[in-house]
Length: 98
View 1 (cartoon, rainbow, N blue to C red):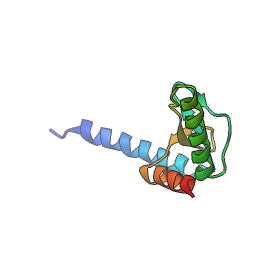
View 2 (cartoon, rainbow, N blue to C red):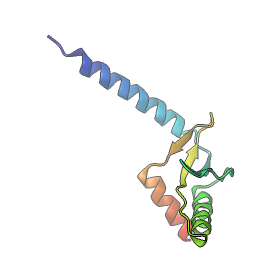
View 3 (spheres, one colour):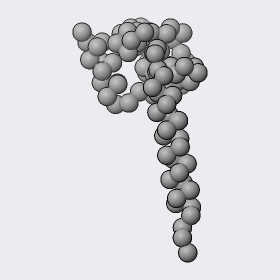
């Protein structure tokens, strides 16, 4: 008997990956967002600008004894927040350091 569960599951995963990739390719702006602190409210044109803003937010939180849970995320055309890939995160911090 053929195991259809595995092929069905793979198909669903491939579909979700395709949808995510399509959404990610529409990212034109970035923001800082965290589960506790929420979004910063600024749409940055570059990942480097978002990383600089995140650094300031982290410094400001530390100065009052707190911690910022925000991270840089992409904003898709439909407004969905998308986590950045490891490469994009590296690019953000490299741009922030310049």
